[in-house]
Amino acid sequence: MKLKLSTILLTGLVFLAACSNDETSTETEPNNEEQNQTPDETSDSSEEGSTVANVVAENVMIPGGTKEEGTPPTPNEAITLDIVGARKTANLNEGFEIPFSSSGTVTGAYLQFKDKDGEVADGYYDINLSENNVSKESFTKHLGVKRNQKVQSKQSAQSIDVDFNTQIEPGEFCYIVCVYDSEGNISAPQEVCVTIAAWGGYEALLGTWNFVEEAFQEGENAQLTVSGLSGCTEITIVCPEFSYADEECFNIDKGEIVFNADGTYEYDYQITITTINPETYEVCNTIFDTSVYSYQSSGFWSYDETENEFAIVEYNYSEDDNGTQDTGDFEPGEGYLLYFGTIEISDNRLTITETEDEDLNGIPDYIYKEVYEKE
Image 1 (cartoon, rainbow, N blue to C red):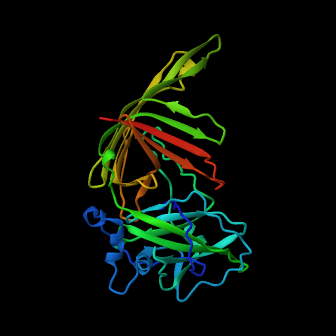
Image 2 (cartoon, rainbow, N blue to C red):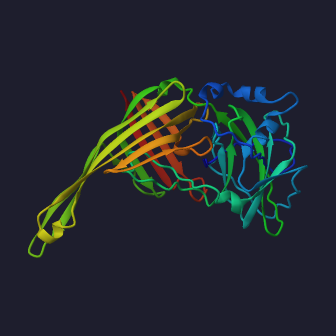
């Protein structure tokens, strides 16, 4: 799964560059008992003499990445590297994404891992971005409120995809990254720290929540549009001798999400939509079509209370679009990011807020909110 990664710049003496990858991977379902551990336990999973940085470096999968010995080439800083609005957390079995912008026409990146104590992993990764960026389809399927649409997530123009295998456990690590172009120009390095969040872990979220309303804003100066459990849109029917108005309506029959203590979730959604049949305009008498869309989903959720970063990763779904059915099951590393954003709980109401900064200028181009009420 592609995840946008967020970053926090650290001080350190590590020489530029950045990266890590090993393409060994296991095809097992997420094991929450093994992975719901405290952050410091990542270091315990390493063999004697190994650092956290080496454990991470040996258990990531980076499309287009080749592991090299030594240190990355020295940068001339002739091109820039900016990382804005990235995540400060990564998900078990899934990894993270590094969104970036640069003044150059970037073709590759150097990536190197280090632990929080400053110990750097052996070697680094040279990443061919043309192979990394096209390796996976990446979109966010917003449930329910998007009225049965799979919505393409607004990703930054460029990003680096870093995936985890199942050997990486909850903990903290850092990385150093720089990018280069075809002329050999290399940016100054950026250093980033990431917390690998365990599944679950936030007691206030546990239980059953029912959808109440959504709010959507697209464009920096646009108004926030709010929509509830039902609504109608007036449609004008134009006939040869007269015109009249009628309505197309929707009703959300169910929008329930359950957060379990083991880090799993279940989502159940159904909407009924009434539309005006095109024949109405020929006979000048309203003919309605009614369709029902339902969606069920399950997987894992995580929440980093310190950073207020919340994520839901889907591993199973079933969909029924007015009789046309579809199902899917995803292996670890291939899950779909249904939600990533911040949450607020107040008076038994849960608000999930997602934002996208498409041009990486620090100002959201897209704001999306969902409000749920505890059962």
